[in-house]
View 1 (spheres, rainbow, N blue to C red):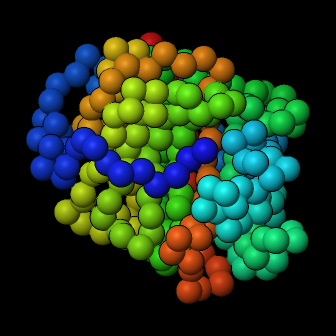
View 2: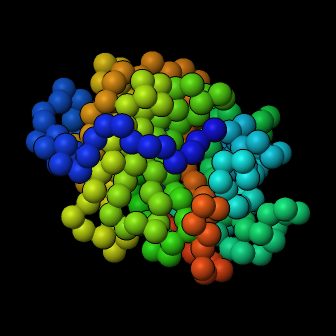
Length: 252
């Protein structure tokens, strides 16, 4: 399962140097959109998303063994004004879980797959525009999951006790970077993208490349967005939110 890892490659200096590296699959030409949610309605689209995931060991809705304090509920997801708001609340939603929060997945949903189930392919470009949470104790991310994690891709992970670091990981090849931003990432909207191979995996922040690692050759991988509550640094607040403007997958 997904855990905070010790980064073996990709310091802040390396990430900044890679920002100027040209690539054949740049954020400027990612191909046609094959999946998107612009969150333009007034409720989450259950034809695109499920909240159950087989990445979550407890009834597909919770995972305390992965340093998560939250139980995933539909009530944690609100859509309005063109934005998805995911809210974590300390409200005891399930025995053994003090927090509720949100995870949405396009597949690998424990028999609860949405009617429009979608999986990413090698060569896809995944992009999320979002506003990250400020209060410490939260762990949002965009990632892929094939049912066993053997080729998981983390478009980003963010631990909200540190407002400057993004963790970018290709679990298939073991390559990763920590990007250290010169600015607080919680004060504005940002776009985080990942080119999923096939030859190289590349990450972008606001259209600028910040990391490059090895190939990706996954199949059947769900796209997941979440706001986890992090047990290693428990929150001092009782409620916190993040916002997502859109998620898009482009394909050449």
